[in-house]
Image (cartoon, rainbow, N blue to C red; front, side, top):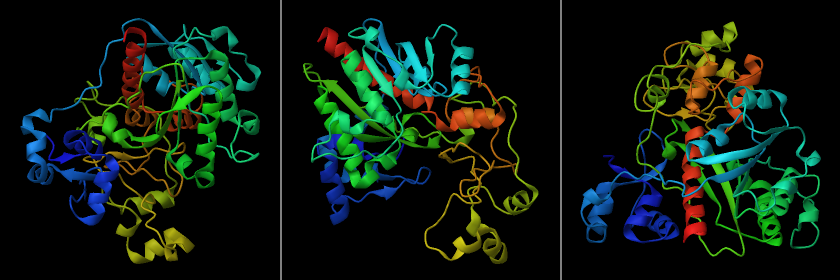
Length: 409
């Protein structure tokens, strides 16, 4: 059992809000620490027990969480901006059925058809599709819409003000289909985009089309059985005639590492299959040969640091993703769409090379049998853009839990 507890776990255990815990951290009443592997702020279990043992009862009650819940009937999903299927597979593993998936990228569509011939893949621009045939026939609409600025008209942003953006299309489809629940996902940066106005605009649009918005949360993939420090923001709307609360999936205390991703173990029954992969140019390989596992550019000799970093050597900030070699005993940093580009190197622990396509897929928790269409560069792009499958599965359980309550009380 881990010696650390997440903010959400401590909040649940002692019955205090997360904001209260953050205040206590600032004023020293209950200090959070950096968890050694993940580097996220967590609490030492002994500190929590020392202060709140009476509230917690026996430590044995702090068991590993499971979000698993069985669907009480067949629930259906309409997925927009489906990509290569990361969220789709995750929802499927949680027991939800994808009735249709829309995606504009032709290679991602080929990937979806290749792996799931029976899925109804709607290839093309979302603007050209009418989804009214699914009105009152779909339980959830999901979509990873891109983050775009809106034009503002007056103080309260309405649906028409968002025309031309892909969030407008997401909201239009939700309005056409009227599912009990809709879930949009995005990058963490949406929180601060246009100083928070973009996100507020999205909330007011969902409100206008008849959906109450659940408080937005950023879910850290490492707490949902994903060996990668990836974060995704979730925007959840519940149709206003429904008096059922949605609860985000509980975080797990088990943190998986790169070793769990690429070798035989709990996450995968065998070691990662061999596959194609990008290569570093000779100069970059010479530099990265000098970086130890878990190291980065600051571990290079000073003269090479200056040469490799150029002008950015003298700028502020850690730039910890540059010339970075991942260690076996840590989760991978967030994967990007191009594994060899400067500033986001993710070098293999033992060999001086980027991760291969299948290693990329493992780090995103795609099943080994899930094939990707297109060139190696296209495959990297599809995987790098995806929602991690295991995160999608845990979110799927939370949707099933909500729908079970909605339909069966």
